[in-house]
Length: 127
Image 1 (cartoon, rainbow, N blue to C red):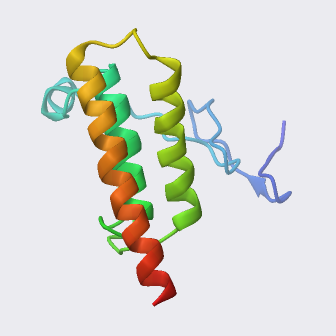
Image 2: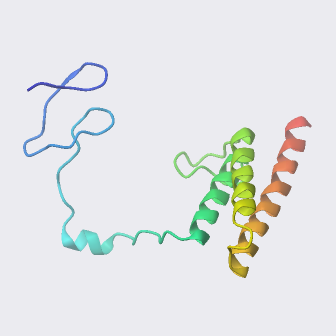
């Protein structure tokens, strides 16, 4: 059987391969050695605090306050920043009465801080 990527180019399957990536190319099949697994950082725990922090961090990237970790450049996208801030507001509105004191403080503080920075960024864009 011939394998082709999304552009129709014929690709060669790797020996022992099997998984194809989103670009249509075979994914490497090498498994990490046990020593490498121990050296890798543990996956972050999925909880409310980390979720809110990740949305806030993304908003800070789009506000141009933090460098994009993929490009190491500061990039502004105020439309996307506003979307993320509004997402946090929706989460706050939908979880009223269901959050611990610490969760509510984190969410409210994040929204407040991001809204202030958004207003400043919009003012700077117009100036």
